[in-house]
Length: 139
Image (cartoon, rainbow, N blue to C red; front, side, top):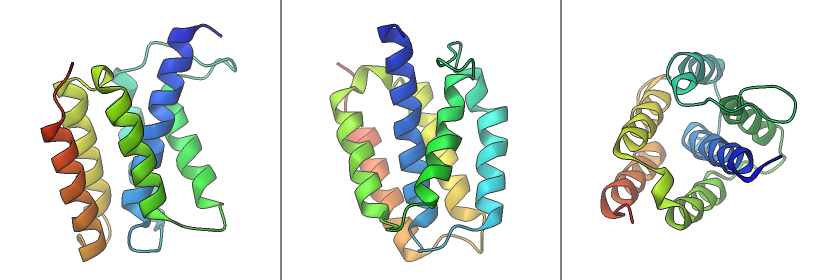
């Protein structure tokens, strides 16, 4: 697999971690959150991927794969996955164009609000994400 494919796959895996962190912030993943994520990946994020992974699957589906995999983990730790995304983001700011940042913000907001509105835990993570996205200039 070439470097560009590796970069894109890792990029989408980290988005999966972020979206999972937002969804699990309230300690429960609802079926509606899964369904919404799948819909958003197909309708919105599919526009951003032109590369397929080594199995012939669009790299964007790494978002869903990581989200599903993390949901089967025994420790549901929103903070850990949020921090992993934050580290990746800060080390790879050039991948995060204004358009990508906007898509990330729209997706996280939608996921947080899908089941009975946004709770305190989700609002805290969304606030931190907003600061990260706004205060990190593209190099």
